[in-house]
Image 1 (cartoon, rainbow, N blue to C red):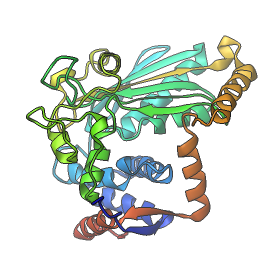
Image 2: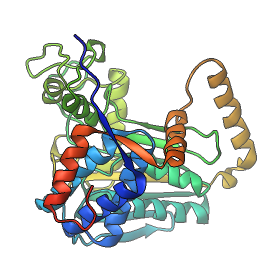
Image 3: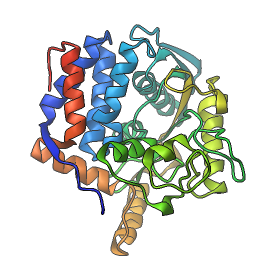
Length: 341
């Protein structure tokens, strides 16, 4: 029999944000960094991406509490040239360092048309779309990526050597694409979410367990070697992200990217459309492309997330799986946060 859908809890956005901010501050995270992580997590929830919302936030809170992330990290910005900067994360989670890198890349692009900033010595940075969406709001085309611990085996290989290495891009305009994807059939957080909800994964996703046998068990898939989306093409993109976010920035790469601890890297690229003479013409071309996709019955990158954000904003609440809500409430109460769920 198919699994029964898990019950959910409606949580007001204001209440959830206050609880998250309080929980991070309760484990010693500075106010500025706690606010940045909270904003990124809330954006994921509003956009209907629970794999990077409250579910991920609990792991982050525990990471700071247990000492895997440094709540007092010395985050340093090193300007390497008029268009390039390097942000040293100091062993914290990736949210604030990557946000600072975004600002540095945009500053460079504002001066000469193109800017880039790398980040090293960080944990995961959450949802990659969070950063490029902000760049688009500021009028810039942007790309953001991060390398992750090894999950993928190369085509023909049997050992994971590279992460699924998420990459996102966006541009200014209401109809600009907002793409965010890791190079596995689904994000690792989706496997965890399905496990917690008692759901299986489809065989056609191509996951295998530790013995190499096809599996529909999310945790067996998590413990096995994950397939690259698109086979050799997807694996090649994962290698590209490892090059840009890891080797280029001086962060850990490949099998050296640690599980659960900082060491990964990220990269943000920003482009000023006006320097290329694109301006309103670019927006018109993107609208035409989006319209053709939608009129064909397809979905344009970003449509689902933007509609979910709009809808949740109008409602003022998001639906959280009951098991996630209960776990988060227990964790936040344990921390004696000023703002519980």
